[in-house]
Structures are given as structure tokens and as C-alpha cells.
Length: 169
Picture 1: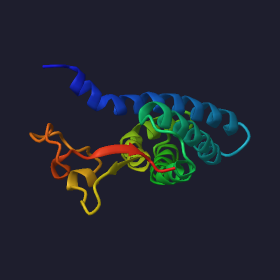
Picture 2: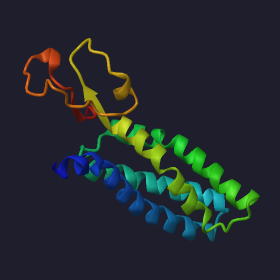
Picture 3: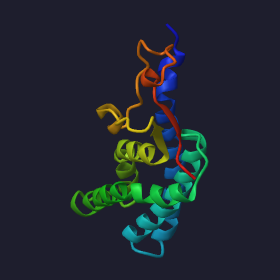
């Protein structure tokens, strides 16, 4: 059994996590600097905005291997809105209710938001291409790639696995 198959399947998630680490360092540095001159929540949101830009560019290049597009630039931050709402609520909860340090709360909130961010980003940046009239499966709607079945060698259009391509330009 080859180990390349399992690694190839999780490579995008691992790369997404590495990009997220870089993004977190950038966002956190911006947050710490701005926290000195603006309230902590404003500093957090501004740091997040800078981080979204970094994340978009790095994820296009390294995680999903697609060219950045204007459409992606507009949609990627929109896809992150649930992420910022959840993580901001987490920061406020940790600081105001639980009494956590303002320097620690954003790091914890960011880590907890990673799975949501990965699924949303993948949906925005990578779109399946299927023959006209073919509906996506439930698994594809949930963000899973189609599995290669016994029809892999078949060249008929009806049985060909769906290919994935970059988002439209």
C-alpha cells in the first residue's frame, strides 16, 4: 500500500494549517501593535482583515494551487465572515466573561475557527466541473471530492470521474 494516497488527500488541509500559522503570526503581530493605540476588539478586527489578505494570497498559491482572481478576492473575505463572527464572539467571551488575557484569547479563538475556515475557503476557491445537467452528489455538496470507483479506466462521459478546476476568471 502506498503512503502517497493518504498524504495526497490531506496535503491541502496540512498546507491550509501551515498557511494559517503564517496568517496567525501576521494577524497577531498587527493586533499586538494596534492594541497599543485602539481598543482590543478594534485591533483584533483590523489584524484579522490584514490576515485575510495574506491568507487569500497564500492559500491560492500553496493550498489550492489556483491563480488569485478578483472574484476570489471579493468572495474569500465574505467566506470568512462566519469565521470572524465566531472568533470575535470567542475573544469577547474569553476576555470579558472568563477573564482571559487579551493577548491569549485571539490565539485560542483562531485555532478553534480553523475547521470552519478550511471548509468555507475550499468551497470558494475550488469548484467542481461536471457535465451539463449532472447534479452534484450529497458528498460533493458537503465539500468532499468524488471518490475514484471501479469505473476509473472507463472513458465514457457518463462514467468519468468529475474533475476539479480553479475558480473562473
